[in-house]
Length: 508
Ligand SMILES: [Ca+2]
Ligand SMILES: [Ca+2]
Image (cartoon, rainbow, N blue to C red; front, side, top):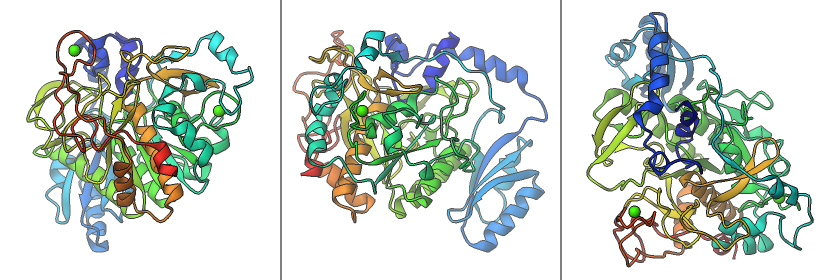
Protein backbone atom coordinates (compact mmCIF):
# COMPACT_ATOMS: atom_id res chain seq x y z
CA UNK A 1 0.00 0.00 0.00
CA UNK A 2 3.02 2.25 0.00
CA UNK A 3 1.86 3.68 -3.32
CA UNK A 4 -0.96 5.43 -1.48
CA UNK A 5 1.31 7.43 0.77
CA UNK A 6 2.01 10.36 -1.51
CA UNK A 7 -1.67 10.57 -2.31
CA UNK A 8 -2.47 10.86 1.33
CA UNK A 9 -0.17 13.83 1.56
CA UNK A 10 -1.81 15.69 -1.29
CA UNK A 11 -4.45 16.12 1.27
CA UNK A 12 -6.90 18.19 -0.64
CA UNK A 13 -6.58 16.72 -4.11
CA UNK A 14 -8.52 13.58 -4.80
CA UNK A 15 -6.39 11.59 -7.23
CA UNK A 16 -8.23 9.98 -10.06
CA UNK A 17 -7.27 6.35 -9.70
CA UNK A 18 -8.20 5.81 -6.06
CA UNK A 19 -11.02 3.73 -4.72
CA UNK A 20 -13.88 5.69 -3.22
CA UNK A 21 -12.78 4.96 0.34
CA UNK A 22 -9.36 6.40 -0.22
CA UNK A 23 -10.75 9.28 -2.25
CA UNK A 24 -12.76 10.45 0.72
CA UNK A 25 -9.57 11.04 2.61
CA UNK A 26 -9.61 8.02 4.87
CA UNK A 27 -6.86 5.61 4.06
CA UNK A 28 -7.07 1.99 5.09
CA UNK A 29 -5.00 1.54 8.24
CA UNK A 30 -2.59 -0.68 6.35
CA UNK A 31 -1.63 2.21 4.12
CA UNK A 32 -0.18 4.06 7.05
CA UNK A 33 1.28 1.13 8.91
CA UNK A 34 4.50 1.00 6.94
CA UNK A 35 5.70 4.56 7.55
CA UNK A 36 4.76 4.25 11.21
CA UNK A 37 6.88 1.15 11.64
CA UNK A 38 9.72 2.96 9.96
CA UNK A 39 9.58 5.93 12.31
CA UNK A 40 9.39 3.73 15.34
CA UNK A 41 12.44 1.74 14.39
CA UNK A 42 14.32 4.94 13.66
CA UNK A 43 13.49 6.54 17.00
CA UNK A 44 16.59 7.20 19.06
CA UNK A 45 17.56 9.31 22.04
CA UNK A 46 19.29 11.90 19.89
CA UNK A 47 16.35 12.58 17.58
CA UNK A 48 15.54 16.23 17.03
CA UNK A 49 11.96 17.45 17.53
CA UNK A 50 10.38 20.69 16.31
CA UNK A 51 8.44 23.09 18.56
CA UNK A 52 6.47 26.30 18.27
CA UNK A 53 6.79 28.85 21.07
CA UNK A 54 4.29 31.72 20.93
CA UNK A 55 5.03 34.77 23.03
CA UNK A 56 4.09 38.36 23.67
CA UNK A 57 5.72 40.56 21.03
CA UNK A 58 7.54 43.13 23.16
CA UNK A 59 11.33 43.04 22.75
CA UNK A 60 11.96 42.29 26.42
CA UNK A 61 9.74 39.19 26.36
CA UNK A 62 11.19 37.95 23.08
CA UNK A 63 14.71 38.31 24.44
CA UNK A 64 14.02 36.65 27.77
CA UNK A 65 12.08 33.78 26.16
CA UNK A 66 14.94 33.15 23.74
CA UNK A 67 17.30 32.89 26.72
CA UNK A 68 14.88 30.50 28.41
CA UNK A 69 14.68 28.39 25.24
CA UNK A 70 18.44 28.00 25.28
CA UNK A 71 18.46 27.20 28.98
CA UNK A 72 15.79 24.52 28.41
CA UNK A 73 17.91 22.78 25.77
CA UNK A 74 16.33 24.29 22.67
CA UNK A 75 17.90 25.98 19.67
CA UNK A 76 16.08 28.72 17.76
CA UNK A 77 15.64 27.85 14.08
CA UNK A 78 13.96 31.16 13.30
CA UNK A 79 12.10 33.80 15.29
CA UNK A 80 9.25 35.80 13.80
CA UNK A 81 9.54 38.55 16.39
CA UNK A 82 6.71 40.69 15.00
CA UNK A 83 4.16 37.97 15.63
CA UNK A 84 5.89 36.34 18.59
CA UNK A 85 6.34 32.95 16.95
CA UNK A 86 9.64 31.15 17.59
CA UNK A 87 10.49 27.88 15.83
CA UNK A 88 12.69 25.70 18.03
CA UNK A 89 14.49 22.38 17.65
CA UNK A 90 15.27 20.26 20.69
CA UNK A 91 16.17 16.69 21.47
CA UNK A 92 14.21 16.97 24.73
CA UNK A 93 10.73 15.44 24.50
CA UNK A 94 9.71 17.52 27.53
CA UNK A 95 10.84 20.79 25.99
CA UNK A 96 7.28 22.13 25.46
CA UNK A 97 6.27 21.27 29.01
CA UNK A 98 9.27 23.20 30.33
CA UNK A 99 8.93 26.26 28.12
CA UNK A 100 5.20 26.69 28.82
CA UNK A 101 6.10 27.64 32.39
CA UNK A 102 8.25 30.57 31.25
CA UNK A 103 6.89 34.08 31.76
CA UNK A 104 5.69 35.65 28.50
CA UNK A 105 5.08 32.33 26.74
CA UNK A 106 1.42 32.30 25.67
CA UNK A 107 1.34 28.84 24.10
CA UNK A 108 3.94 26.28 23.11
CA UNK A 109 3.93 22.78 21.73
CA UNK A 110 5.38 20.19 19.42
CA UNK A 111 4.67 20.97 15.80
CA UNK A 112 4.97 17.29 14.86
CA UNK A 113 4.70 13.91 16.54
CA UNK A 114 7.77 12.50 14.80
CA UNK A 115 11.39 13.64 14.75
CA UNK A 116 12.71 16.10 12.21
CA UNK A 117 13.91 13.88 9.36
CA UNK A 118 16.35 14.21 6.57
CA UNK A 119 14.86 13.87 3.09
CA UNK A 120 13.57 10.39 2.38
CA UNK A 121 12.99 8.53 -0.83
CA UNK A 122 10.27 9.39 -3.28
CA UNK A 123 7.37 7.32 -4.48
CA UNK A 124 5.35 7.17 -7.68
CA UNK A 125 2.70 9.76 -8.42
CA UNK A 126 -1.06 9.53 -8.53
CA UNK A 127 -1.97 11.94 -11.23
CA UNK A 128 -3.72 11.11 -14.49
CA UNK A 129 -1.35 12.44 -17.12
CA UNK A 130 -2.63 13.42 -20.50
CA UNK A 131 -2.34 10.72 -23.15
CA UNK A 132 0.19 10.91 -25.96
CA UNK A 133 -2.63 11.86 -28.32
CA UNK A 134 -3.64 14.66 -25.97
CA UNK A 135 -0.10 15.87 -25.68
CA UNK A 136 0.32 15.77 -29.46
CA UNK A 137 -2.63 18.12 -29.67
CA UNK A 138 -0.48 20.73 -27.97
CA UNK A 139 1.49 21.09 -31.16
CA UNK A 140 -1.62 21.74 -33.25
CA UNK A 141 -2.81 25.24 -33.82
CA UNK A 142 -5.57 26.32 -31.53
CA UNK A 143 -9.05 27.48 -32.47
CA UNK A 144 -8.83 31.24 -32.91
CA UNK A 145 -8.81 32.90 -29.50
CA UNK A 146 -8.60 29.58 -27.68
CA UNK A 147 -5.79 27.57 -26.15
CA UNK A 148 -5.21 24.12 -27.68
CA UNK A 149 -6.61 22.24 -24.66
CA UNK A 150 -9.26 24.79 -23.73
CA UNK A 151 -12.15 22.72 -25.07
CA UNK A 152 -11.56 20.37 -22.12
CA UNK A 153 -11.46 23.24 -19.63
CA UNK A 154 -15.15 23.29 -18.76
CA UNK A 155 -14.22 24.91 -15.46
CA UNK A 156 -13.21 28.15 -17.22
CA UNK A 157 -16.57 28.44 -18.93
CA UNK A 158 -18.42 27.55 -15.71
CA UNK A 159 -17.23 30.76 -14.07
CA UNK A 160 -17.05 32.93 -17.20
CA UNK A 161 -13.24 32.95 -17.18
CA UNK A 162 -13.05 32.53 -20.96
CA UNK A 163 -15.13 35.68 -21.50
CA UNK A 164 -13.38 37.50 -18.65
CA UNK A 165 -9.97 36.98 -20.23
CA UNK A 166 -11.12 38.82 -23.36
CA UNK A 167 -12.19 41.79 -21.22
CA UNK A 168 -9.38 41.84 -18.63
CA UNK A 169 -6.94 38.97 -17.99
CA UNK A 170 -5.80 40.58 -14.73
CA UNK A 171 -2.94 42.88 -13.80
CA UNK A 172 0.78 42.10 -13.71
CA UNK A 173 0.82 44.11 -10.48
CA UNK A 174 -1.15 41.36 -8.71
CA UNK A 175 0.55 38.16 -7.50
CA UNK A 176 -0.98 34.95 -6.22
CA UNK A 177 1.47 32.84 -4.20
CA UNK A 178 0.90 29.10 -4.29
CA UNK A 179 1.81 27.69 -0.85
CA UNK A 180 2.30 24.07 -1.82
CA UNK A 181 4.75 21.30 -2.78
CA UNK A 182 6.61 23.53 -5.22
CA UNK A 183 5.87 25.14 -8.58
CA UNK A 184 7.67 24.21 -11.81
CA UNK A 185 8.24 27.70 -13.19
CA UNK A 186 10.09 26.24 -16.19
CA UNK A 187 6.77 24.95 -17.56
CA UNK A 188 6.13 26.96 -20.75
CA UNK A 189 2.57 27.74 -19.61
CA UNK A 190 3.76 29.08 -16.23
CA UNK A 191 7.11 30.70 -17.08
CA UNK A 192 5.58 33.83 -18.70
CA UNK A 193 3.72 34.77 -15.51
CA UNK A 194 6.07 33.54 -12.80
CA UNK A 195 7.47 35.86 -10.13
CA UNK A 196 10.80 34.51 -8.78
CA UNK A 197 11.31 37.46 -6.42
CA UNK A 198 8.13 36.48 -4.54
CA UNK A 199 8.97 32.77 -4.39
CA UNK A 200 10.90 30.76 -1.79
CA UNK A 201 11.34 27.48 0.01
CA UNK A 202 9.94 27.56 3.56
CA UNK A 203 10.27 23.88 4.45
CA UNK A 204 12.70 24.45 7.35
CA UNK A 205 10.54 27.21 8.82
CA UNK A 206 12.99 29.83 7.56
CA UNK A 207 12.69 31.19 4.02
CA UNK A 208 15.34 30.08 1.53
CA UNK A 209 15.27 32.40 -1.49
CA UNK A 210 17.98 30.61 -3.47
CA UNK A 211 17.00 30.79 -7.14
CA UNK A 212 14.90 27.74 -8.00
CA UNK A 213 14.39 26.70 -4.35
CA UNK A 214 10.63 26.80 -4.99
CA UNK A 215 10.74 24.07 -7.62
CA UNK A 216 9.31 20.59 -6.96
CA UNK A 217 12.03 18.12 -5.92
CA UNK A 218 10.58 15.46 -8.25
CA UNK A 219 7.62 14.79 -10.54
CA UNK A 220 5.62 13.32 -7.64
CA UNK A 221 5.49 16.79 -6.13
CA UNK A 222 3.13 17.86 -8.93
CA UNK A 223 0.29 19.35 -6.92
CA UNK A 224 1.56 22.95 -6.76
CA UNK A 225 2.26 23.12 -10.48
CA UNK A 226 -1.32 22.05 -11.23
CA UNK A 227 -2.64 24.72 -8.86
CA UNK A 228 -0.39 27.42 -10.35
CA UNK A 229 -1.59 26.66 -13.88
CA UNK A 230 -5.23 26.83 -12.82
CA UNK A 231 -4.57 30.35 -11.56
CA UNK A 232 -2.35 31.88 -14.20
CA UNK A 233 -1.37 29.57 -17.09
CA UNK A 234 -0.67 31.98 -19.93
CA UNK A 235 -2.86 32.52 -22.99
CA UNK A 236 0.11 31.91 -25.24
CA UNK A 237 -1.20 29.51 -27.87
CA UNK A 238 0.03 26.39 -26.06
CA UNK A 239 -1.61 24.03 -23.59
CA UNK A 240 -4.17 25.49 -21.20
CA UNK A 241 -5.25 28.84 -19.83
CA UNK A 242 -5.58 29.87 -16.21
CA UNK A 243 -8.53 31.76 -14.75
CA UNK A 244 -6.44 34.95 -14.48
CA UNK A 245 -3.85 34.61 -17.27
CA UNK A 246 -2.64 38.20 -16.85
CA UNK A 247 -1.63 38.07 -13.17
CA UNK A 248 1.59 36.82 -11.68
CA UNK A 249 2.00 33.58 -9.81
CA UNK A 250 4.66 32.68 -7.24
CA UNK A 251 5.60 29.44 -5.49
CA UNK A 252 6.33 29.00 -1.79
CA UNK A 253 7.34 25.42 -1.04
CA UNK A 254 6.20 24.02 2.30
CA UNK A 255 6.13 20.26 1.65
CA UNK A 256 8.74 17.90 2.99
CA UNK A 257 10.78 16.50 0.11
CA UNK A 258 10.04 12.83 0.87
CA UNK A 259 7.15 10.82 -0.54
CA UNK A 260 4.72 11.77 2.24
CA UNK A 261 5.02 15.47 1.35
CA UNK A 262 3.93 16.67 4.78
CA UNK A 263 3.12 20.36 5.33
CA UNK A 264 4.31 21.13 8.88
CA UNK A 265 3.12 24.23 10.75
CA UNK A 266 6.47 26.02 10.94
CA UNK A 267 6.75 25.83 7.14
CA UNK A 268 3.31 27.37 6.74
CA UNK A 269 4.06 30.13 9.30
CA UNK A 270 7.14 30.96 7.25
CA UNK A 271 5.09 31.01 4.04
CA UNK A 272 2.45 33.45 5.29
CA UNK A 273 5.09 35.82 6.69
CA UNK A 274 7.19 35.59 3.51
CA UNK A 275 4.16 36.26 1.27
CA UNK A 276 3.14 39.26 3.37
CA UNK A 277 6.68 40.68 3.43
CA UNK A 278 7.08 40.30 -0.34
CA UNK A 279 3.96 42.11 -1.51
CA UNK A 280 1.89 39.05 -2.39
CA UNK A 281 -1.79 40.06 -2.72
CA UNK A 282 -3.34 36.59 -2.49
CA UNK A 283 -2.17 33.19 -1.25
CA UNK A 284 -3.58 29.84 -2.33
CA UNK A 285 -3.73 27.16 0.37
CA UNK A 286 -4.86 23.80 -1.02
CA UNK A 287 -3.92 21.70 2.02
CA UNK A 288 -4.31 21.31 5.73
CA UNK A 289 -1.41 21.73 8.09
CA UNK A 290 0.01 18.38 9.19
CA UNK A 291 0.11 16.35 11.32
CA UNK A 292 -3.45 17.00 12.63
CA UNK A 293 -6.43 17.25 10.29
CA UNK A 294 -8.30 18.88 13.18
CA UNK A 295 -6.40 20.79 15.87
CA UNK A 296 -8.19 20.70 19.22
CA UNK A 297 -7.85 23.73 21.48
CA UNK A 298 -7.85 21.63 24.65
CA UNK A 299 -4.61 19.95 23.57
CA UNK A 300 -1.57 22.15 24.31
CA UNK A 301 0.40 21.07 21.23
CA UNK A 302 -2.50 21.46 18.83
CA UNK A 303 -3.42 24.78 20.45
CA UNK A 304 0.11 26.07 19.84
CA UNK A 305 -0.19 25.08 16.17
CA UNK A 306 -3.48 26.97 15.77
CA UNK A 307 -2.02 29.96 17.63
CA UNK A 308 1.17 30.12 15.53
CA UNK A 309 -0.48 29.71 12.12
CA UNK A 310 -3.26 32.10 13.09
CA UNK A 311 -0.72 34.77 14.06
CA UNK A 312 1.04 34.37 10.71
CA UNK A 313 -2.24 34.42 8.78
CA UNK A 314 -3.41 37.56 10.59
CA UNK A 315 -0.05 39.21 10.01
CA UNK A 316 -0.44 38.56 6.27
CA UNK A 317 -4.02 39.80 6.28
CA UNK A 318 -3.03 43.03 8.04
CA UNK A 319 -0.32 43.60 5.45
CA UNK A 320 -2.88 43.28 2.64
CA UNK A 321 -2.72 39.59 1.73
CA UNK A 322 -5.95 37.66 1.24
CA UNK A 323 -5.57 33.97 2.12
CA UNK A 324 -7.80 31.44 0.34
CA UNK A 325 -8.00 27.82 1.55
CA UNK A 326 -9.60 24.51 0.65
CA UNK A 327 -12.46 23.16 2.79
CA UNK A 328 -11.19 19.57 2.52
CA UNK A 329 -12.06 16.37 0.70
CA UNK A 330 -13.64 14.32 3.48
CA UNK A 331 -17.28 15.22 2.67
CA UNK A 332 -17.28 16.43 6.30
CA UNK A 333 -19.92 18.79 7.62
CA UNK A 334 -17.70 21.39 9.27
CA UNK A 335 -20.72 22.74 11.14
CA UNK A 336 -21.63 19.40 12.71
CA UNK A 337 -21.15 18.60 16.40
CA UNK A 338 -19.02 15.51 15.87
CA UNK A 339 -16.69 14.36 13.11
CA UNK A 340 -14.51 11.28 12.96
CA UNK A 341 -10.84 12.05 12.33
CA UNK A 342 -9.10 8.73 11.72
CA UNK A 343 -5.96 10.05 10.02
CA UNK A 344 -4.26 12.14 12.73
CA UNK A 345 -1.48 12.45 13.59
CA UNK A 346 -0.36 11.54 10.08
CA UNK A 347 3.38 11.67 10.81
CA UNK A 348 3.35 8.80 13.31
CA UNK A 349 0.48 6.62 14.55
CA UNK A 350 -3.01 7.91 13.71
CA UNK A 351 -5.74 7.38 16.28
CA UNK A 352 -9.50 7.40 15.85
CA UNK A 353 -10.85 10.61 17.34
CA UNK A 354 -14.30 12.13 17.39
CA UNK A 355 -13.90 15.91 17.23
CA UNK A 356 -16.18 18.94 17.34
CA UNK A 357 -15.10 21.17 14.42
CA UNK A 358 -16.24 24.22 16.43
CA UNK A 359 -13.39 23.51 18.86
CA UNK A 360 -11.02 21.47 16.73
CA UNK A 361 -9.92 23.33 13.63
CA UNK A 362 -8.82 22.37 10.16
CA UNK A 363 -5.95 24.83 9.65
CA UNK A 364 -5.70 27.16 7.82
CA UNK A 365 -9.16 26.91 6.26
CA UNK A 366 -11.10 27.45 9.52
CA UNK A 367 -9.00 30.38 10.74
CA UNK A 368 -10.87 33.69 10.92
CA UNK A 369 -10.42 35.88 7.83
CA UNK A 370 -9.43 33.00 5.53
CA UNK A 371 -11.71 32.39 2.53
CA UNK A 372 -12.99 28.79 2.82
CA UNK A 373 -13.72 27.08 -0.50
CA UNK A 374 -15.91 24.08 -1.35
CA UNK A 375 -15.79 22.29 -4.71
CA UNK A 376 -18.31 21.84 -7.52
CA UNK A 377 -18.53 19.72 -10.66
CA UNK A 378 -19.63 20.57 -14.19
CA UNK A 379 -23.34 20.42 -13.25
CA UNK A 380 -22.74 23.10 -10.64
CA UNK A 381 -23.49 20.65 -7.82
CA UNK A 382 -21.25 20.14 -4.79
CA UNK A 383 -18.49 17.62 -5.60
CA UNK A 384 -19.07 14.27 -3.91
CA UNK A 385 -15.89 14.56 -1.82
CA UNK A 386 -16.11 18.23 -0.89
CA UNK A 387 -16.42 19.13 2.77
CA UNK A 388 -19.05 21.75 3.49
CA UNK A 389 -20.74 23.51 6.39
CA UNK A 390 -23.13 26.34 7.05
CA UNK A 391 -21.25 29.38 8.31
CA UNK A 392 -17.90 27.76 7.40
CA UNK A 393 -17.81 27.66 3.59
CA UNK A 394 -17.53 31.17 2.15
CA UNK A 395 -17.68 30.44 -1.57
CA UNK A 396 -17.53 27.53 -4.01
CA UNK A 397 -15.73 26.97 -7.32
CA UNK A 398 -15.12 24.19 -9.85
CA UNK A 399 -12.85 21.55 -8.33
CA UNK A 400 -14.07 18.72 -10.55
CA UNK A 401 -16.19 15.66 -9.89
CA UNK A 402 -15.78 12.39 -11.76
CA UNK A 403 -19.51 11.68 -11.34
CA UNK A 404 -20.52 14.91 -13.09
CA UNK A 405 -19.58 14.29 -16.72
CA UNK A 406 -19.03 17.26 -19.04
CA UNK A 407 -19.83 17.49 -22.71
CA UNK A 408 -16.17 18.06 -23.61
CA UNK A 409 -13.88 16.10 -25.94
CA UNK A 410 -12.39 14.19 -22.99
CA UNK A 411 -15.69 13.81 -21.06
CA UNK A 412 -13.47 14.16 -18.00
CA UNK A 413 -15.19 15.82 -15.05
CA UNK A 414 -11.93 16.68 -13.31
CA UNK A 415 -9.80 19.79 -13.79
CA UNK A 416 -7.15 19.96 -16.52
CA UNK A 417 -3.99 21.91 -15.77
CA UNK A 418 -0.20 22.00 -15.89
CA UNK A 419 2.14 19.39 -14.38
CA UNK A 420 5.90 19.41 -13.91
CA UNK A 421 8.21 18.66 -16.86
CA UNK A 422 6.05 20.32 -19.49
CA UNK A 423 3.09 18.01 -18.94
CA UNK A 424 -0.66 18.35 -18.41
CA UNK A 425 -3.18 16.27 -16.52
CA UNK A 426 -6.42 15.99 -14.60
CA UNK A 427 -7.00 16.23 -10.85
CA UNK A 428 -10.08 16.81 -8.73
CA UNK A 429 -10.34 18.17 -5.21
CA UNK A 430 -11.07 21.24 -3.14
CA UNK A 431 -7.37 21.77 -3.93
CA UNK A 432 -8.52 22.52 -7.47
CA UNK A 433 -11.49 24.67 -6.44
CA UNK A 434 -9.35 26.96 -4.27
CA UNK A 435 -7.12 28.27 -7.11
CA UNK A 436 -10.25 29.25 -9.07
CA UNK A 437 -11.24 31.45 -6.13
CA UNK A 438 -7.71 32.78 -5.63
CA UNK A 439 -7.62 33.69 -9.33
CA UNK A 440 -10.99 35.45 -9.24
CA UNK A 441 -9.77 37.34 -6.16
CA UNK A 442 -6.72 38.34 -8.24
CA UNK A 443 -9.03 39.62 -11.00
CA UNK A 444 -10.95 41.60 -8.38
CA UNK A 445 -7.70 43.00 -7.00
CA UNK A 446 -6.77 44.00 -10.56
CA UNK A 447 -10.01 45.93 -11.03
CA UNK A 448 -10.09 47.20 -7.40
CA UNK A 449 -6.40 47.90 -6.61
CA UNK A 450 -7.14 49.54 -3.27
CA UNK A 451 -9.42 46.82 -1.92
CA UNK A 452 -8.35 45.34 1.42
CA UNK A 453 -8.44 41.57 2.01
CA UNK A 454 -11.81 41.86 3.77
CA UNK A 455 -13.20 43.98 0.93
CA UNK A 456 -11.97 41.43 -1.61
CA UNK A 457 -13.67 38.70 0.36
CA UNK A 458 -16.90 40.71 0.41
CA UNK A 459 -16.67 41.26 -3.38
CA UNK A 460 -16.07 37.53 -3.98
CA UNK A 461 -19.26 36.77 -2.05
CA UNK A 462 -21.34 39.59 -3.53
CA UNK A 463 -20.56 38.56 -7.11
CA UNK A 464 -20.90 34.80 -6.56
CA UNK A 465 -23.81 32.93 -8.13
CA UNK A 466 -25.60 30.71 -5.63
CA UNK A 467 -27.34 27.57 -6.89
CA UNK A 468 -29.07 27.26 -3.49
CA UNK A 469 -29.48 23.98 -1.65
CA UNK A 470 -30.48 21.06 -3.89
CA UNK A 471 -34.19 20.28 -3.83
CA UNK A 472 -33.59 16.51 -3.86
CA UNK A 473 -31.64 14.68 -1.16
CA UNK A 474 -27.93 14.92 -2.02
CA UNK A 475 -26.39 11.72 -3.40
CA UNK A 476 -23.04 12.85 -4.79
CA UNK A 477 -21.80 9.48 -5.99
CA UNK A 478 -25.17 8.23 -7.23
CA UNK A 479 -25.22 5.04 -5.17
CA UNK A 480 -28.70 5.68 -3.79
CA UNK A 481 -27.42 6.61 -0.33
CA UNK A 482 -27.77 10.24 0.77
CA UNK A 483 -24.28 11.64 1.47
CA UNK A 484 -24.81 15.10 2.92
CA UNK A 485 -27.45 17.59 3.98
CA UNK A 486 -27.40 21.19 2.80
CA UNK A 487 -28.44 23.77 5.39
CA UNK A 488 -29.44 27.32 4.50
CA UNK A 489 -31.10 29.12 1.63
CA UNK A 490 -30.53 30.78 -1.71
CA UNK A 491 -28.31 33.57 -0.34
CA UNK A 492 -26.02 31.49 1.85
CA UNK A 493 -25.89 27.78 2.56
CA UNK A 494 -23.58 25.02 3.70
CA UNK A 495 -22.75 23.58 0.28
CA UNK A 496 -21.79 26.74 -1.61
CA UNK A 497 -21.49 29.45 1.04
CA UNK A 498 -22.43 32.64 -0.83
CA UNK A 499 -22.19 30.85 -4.16
CA UNK A 500 -19.90 29.86 -7.03
CA UNK A 501 -17.42 32.64 -7.79
CA UNK A 502 -17.64 34.50 -11.11
CA UNK A 503 -14.58 35.57 -13.10
CA UNK A 504 -16.79 37.46 -15.56
CA UNK A 505 -18.50 39.55 -12.89
CA UNK A 506 -15.08 40.32 -11.39
CA UNK A 507 -13.95 42.18 -14.51
CA UNK A 508 -17.22 43.80 -15.60
CA1 LIG B 1 -1.41 28.41 -22.49
CA1 LIG C 1 -24.22 8.44 -2.09
